[in-house]
Image 1 (cartoon, helix red, strand yellow):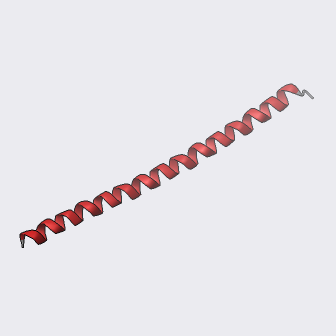
Image 2 (image 1 turned 180 degrees about the horizontal axis):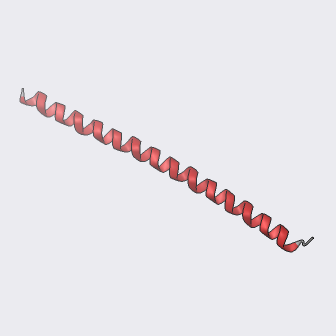
Length: 57
């Protein structure tokens, strides 16, 4: 019985580690998408401001 309890506690630790890894993967993917989107928007804004700043109507 004691080995079953030890095995169950190890399984619980493994499951919690897997859940933590999944949560971390989701968090990092959201951060990557967010930072990439912000970067693209900044580049577009810089290009538009340079274009309209150089050419005056």
